[in-house]
Length: 272
Picture 1 (cartoon, rainbow, N blue to C red):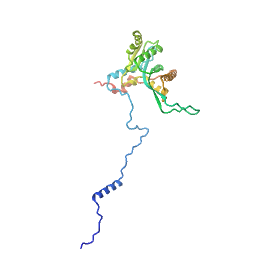
Picture 2: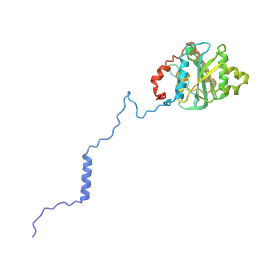
Picture 3: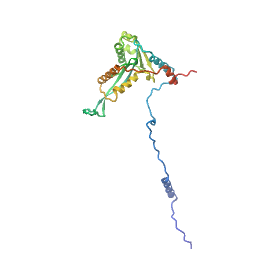
Picture 4: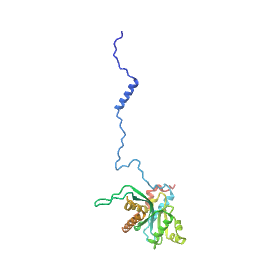
């Protein structure tokens, strides 16, 4: 006769292992990954900005850069003024719904939806040392259009000067051949003899002072407004540049060739 033995509860080893695993996971403290908020003084992750990155150790870029900086360092000469010229595209927009009428003490309420009315190009000429600028919007950017604007500027504001030194970007329309394609040979030759052109290279458009005026134009005149046609846009442009000319707002360019040789030393060729 066998002695009485206590009865034990038999369990499956596999089931027992699963229970122990769940219990262990339940008791373990597994912290979740938390994204630390960035402060205002810190950069957001992976920021991106569009920038003109010039080539390093490039003699061609350096030569053109110092050539233009030497032009900006010249004293003011009314017989040979320096004029910078540039263009920017502009999107014409119209209201999809009629804005609500304005009431005393309330701003005009405009619906957020808009209608695309096409594009145009804003052309600007500026003489930094004299505090003068002129800009106008055109539907298209063409060689003949640029030639006509050059003649208008030369024969309207610079009729009595010896020559006008133009600083322009390296675009396919800003070439002397555009004058020959727009006017008869005698007229084209007359205009060419009254001008000198200096080009900024690719990745060097920041050397054009006209870009500064376009930035001011975008803030002071264009802003977040919707302008639906070129005629209305030109009225706003005339008001802007006439007021700015009357206040003699110029540009005091301080970046000289001596400074660029230190600050942008990486762009210069390495002489062994």
